[in-house]
Figure (spheres, rainbow, N blue to C red):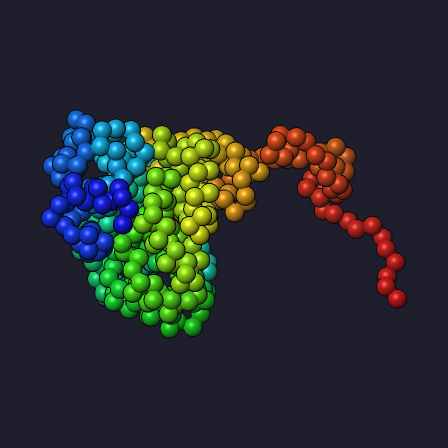
Amino acid sequence: MSERSEAFRRRFYPQASRRDWNDWRWQNRHRIRSAEDLGRIIRLCEQEAEAIRRHSGSLPVGITPYYASLLDETDPGQPLRRTVVPVNAEYVYTAGEALDPLGEDADSPVPGLVHRYPDRALFLVTGLCSVYCRYCTRSRMVGASGEKSVRKSDLERAIGYIEATPAIRDVLISGGDPLSLDDERLEWLLSRLRKIPHLEFLRIGSKQPAVQPQRITPALTRMLKRYHPLWMSLHFTHPDELTPEVAEACGRLADAGIPLGSQTVLLKDVNDSVEIMRTLFQGLLKIRVRPYYLYQCDPIQGSAHFRTPVEKGLEIIKGLRGHTTGYAVPTYVVDAPEGGGKIPLLPDYVAGREGDELLLQNYEDKIFRYPDPGSRYGAFRSPEVMPCT
């Protein structure tokens, strides 16, 4: 337990023991859900308080005490605070935004399953998250209906579809956050999926290590270890999330042999600079998490205040490539509207060509010539050589 967490616990939760604080179930039970509760911890500005009070439906306020300890008490512009505390801009809808911008519902053959790519499926096993990010792609469904669990009959139906579809070799378990489930229910899902012969490996997508690292218990990691090959995609937003507790949680997962990749959403005035991203990605490598995707923020309704121009993402990738290890450079993608899937974007490093030479621009903007006879990018033809005798 870090000094910051301990000081926060003593100040705002003096009735809770250290054992309580380190119990993920206690963290869940004491999530901050109202303007009144949040106002006890941070000084809400007028529009934050109004935005919380006018909310109804899905994507409610939900912040664990642990994550609340990372929020700035007085500054509404603090990056982490902006990602979890509603503002009135959420109620301003602009052109091109949609409740389901990625067209997931159209690619859902049965409830809770999205089958878009030929060989893999997205399995939405819960609508619950311990912390609700205000830019969530699935804001239309998470936290709705009193955060009730997905019906087991729907889970069975989705598993039945996977069993009947041999082309599916990879399932990403997501939600909501699948680590919001208890160990028993999560193991039931993993065991059912592991019995399907054509599934080669499983993935879990989660933000729990960042917002509730107490969830990554020794018991959980022992259980997960039984279902290899198993990978995890973890959601990180800003370097301020890389606390000692998070490092310990990721260390437990890595020690269990689970490859860890990060997924980060590019957010205006939160992490939209080369310096912040470099600090985040280098910090993730130190706790054995490989930066995997940098996402352009999806155009969900009410997200205009979070979205940057695509040029900003390209600028960040260019500022990383060559200036830090390649392991710290994720793939920048736009998840195309209406089910188009992830489309990778890169700065243009091809400066042109002269005859049989391709002109390439490196990270220092210097031009280099690469021999590339043939078509535009080189249908390379080897010179004639004598055959071996």
